[in-house]
Image 1: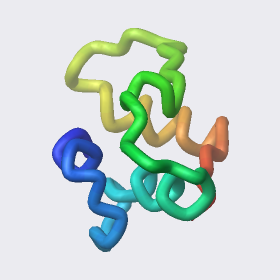
Image 2: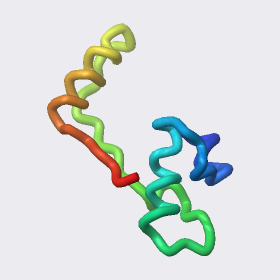
Image 3: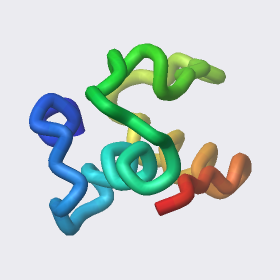
Length: 69
């Protein structure tokens, strides 16, 4: 995602480009904002590395995240 954001490529066809596509489509931008101004991250748990996939799946379905693209 960071490399797509750095290029601000809103034409990339992947989930990694979702944030760029959203900002390109829904915000009147003359230049790319700093990525820290675009979203917030909240850590709800600190699992062991071997458990990351399961936790990602669990929280993805509990929070039902979405982005307008």
